Length: 342
Image (cartoon, rainbow, N blue to C red; front, side, top):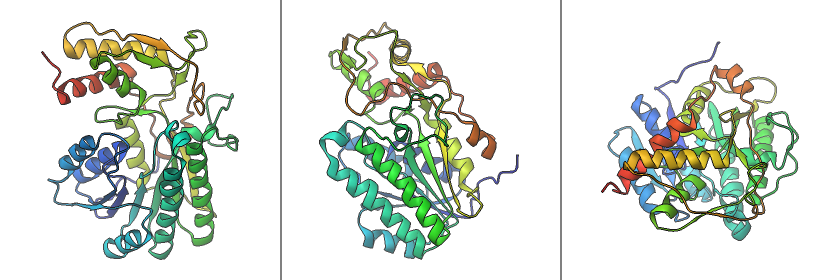
């Protein structure tokens, strides 16, 4: 397998560095001696304290420079590129969340479309070795064919969030074609783990339990046709990104898209039971959620399931962390972070 390993002599610009994936990727690169420039607007879409905790963990690294700002600010992005001359750019800054895009469309256009356009323009005028950017499994919409493959038709998004991510792929392809920017899009599948996003279901379930509230499950209480999700542990996501960083696409149009998912979808109810068991173990007492079943929400899809053949072919990697192992690490961190041990 001929793929190039990470080059610590390069400068890596990571947008969304205070975010879940951005933090873990920054930390991994810093541990290997890379220079990392992190940008984040530290918005309050979810608990800002968690973002500050992540940034606090990155600050001791002498190779880390943090810039508080928004990628939709074109002047800031241009100045950052001119000053730091990054070799590799990883754009993880985005307004996340499918359901929130129904209530608050403006921020998605601002961050995910205008912000990404600014990154592309900056790469156009300050050439980089590789632009890696976050897409999403949501581009597959309500595709019935599983597993989802990168070659599948993705022109029927069911949320504005998904539309913005599909737009990013089209924009990157165009800039790659016109200005020879080597670019790779990553379709992430339900990322979870310690220090994750509190707006994600597993984190919300834990929050509800400790607040003494029932959890809402949006599957109509239909256990036969339960929602399936390809839950992907954070370390697997970071490993996949890291392996791709020094391996830009080649060919006439230097643009490629990869799935990064676990390739083994789990029923939502199985995931919930596993989380109950993990929290029980972390606390040393039995945890059982009170459950309320509701209809599936607009913009949600019944199943996500990634084919990871392309990723394996390119960089010899396939995510393999089981939900038992991943959720235990989350539960142990959660109980410790919120100081919940009696």
